[in-house]
Image 1 (spheres, rainbow, N blue to C red):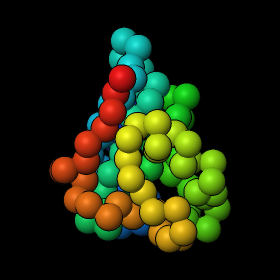
Image 2 (image 1 turned 45 degrees about the vertical axis):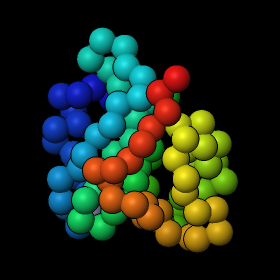
Image 3 (image 1 turned 90 degrees about the vertical axis):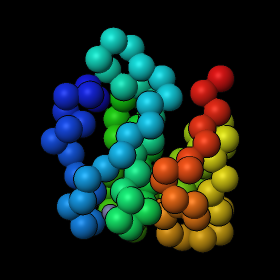
Image 4 (image 1 turned 180 degrees about the horizontal axis):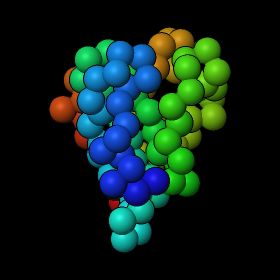
Length: 96
Ligand SMILES: [Zn+2]
């Protein structure tokens, strides 16, 4: 996904603007990152350049967790919601 394309995207649930935190990029292409919506607090990971923006019921948390943990994000495993427990602005990502 390119940064240009990102500007056209919004949260699929409430159509609000998304914030991006790029973790790994290659030129204009975002390879890894996390999109967050400051309105509903949902997060959408970008993995292998593909943003995971499917509805909650079609997302499998078990598939996303290893990546989120690698990024140092503490996201509740048992909770079925895909919302962040902290505000997107304070997200601390381990980019190493
Ligand atoms: Zn939202």
